[in-house]
Image 1 (cartoon, rainbow, N blue to C red):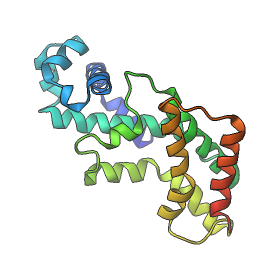
Image 2 (spheres, rainbow, N blue to C red):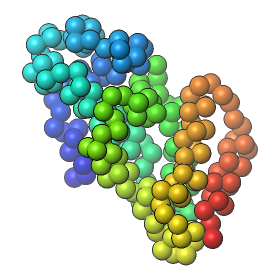
Image 3 (tube, rainbow, N blue to C red):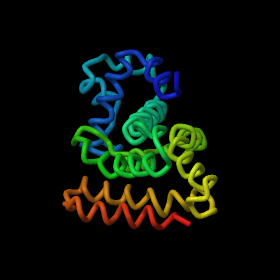
Length: 195
């Protein structure tokens, strides 16, 4: 069992209900709009039920960030360990570009989750690294196979995957790109890391 499914199994239905309601409120009204009373109403539970699972707003937010990171990883890393390095990279890149197009107005994007209080804590950064390890592994495998430039993985991510994140963000904001434009962007990212 991987870490993502383990976290999901640990949560009760009530906890998931509370987190879904919190995400919806934050997506609509921002973090400052989240109060425990409003959350109780949105989740359809008593305020005491929330405190049974979460000591305070910060603890709830920490769990919400973990949940969002894991949900994002499940979509982005789908089949990231199957095929050649190039097939894996291509699949990952397109999964990233397509990801935010799937979010609704009641969901927080990965970018929004990164800006929640505590999202950049050591605990969450560690979770990010371990959760997205398959993405990093594709790049490591490419370096080891002599396909990619032999530079730090963080630089490879910044030059090949982060442009896909930017395109996904722009698509979520309503900007339209043709398949031809996206294919050209993919080619630019792929060739930027090749030896």
